Image 1 (cartoon, rainbow, N blue to C red):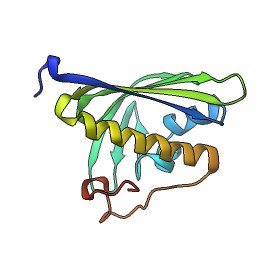
Image 2: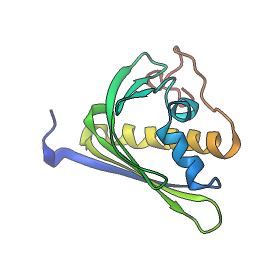
Image 3: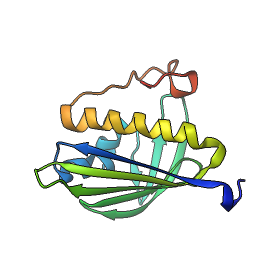
Length: 147
């Protein structure tokens, strides 16, 4: 277990042309998460059952739901991932993601992973396109970014 001193924070911002309510639904619903993030991610009683193409299955807690402005989950490795959604003033959304508690040795991979998730999210919510390959042989673990 890494020491507190070795835990880091990843932070990214993304502009979406979609309104906050639509962006929030992609985070806070089973169907939304399955459109861009995981193969399946149903929530029951505040627990999300994540299922990824590489076979990883993990259950984590929803920590905070404040539609349409904020969604917070416990994520891989016990990090705390926060999505804050702000109106851009033109019917779009500025999303800020922060992932707190990332071990220093995982920082580069986690940071790159969030870029992949966020851009896949933009394609799904703004353009209705799924960029993922959905192939269990071609996953992030095997060096593929379109997992």
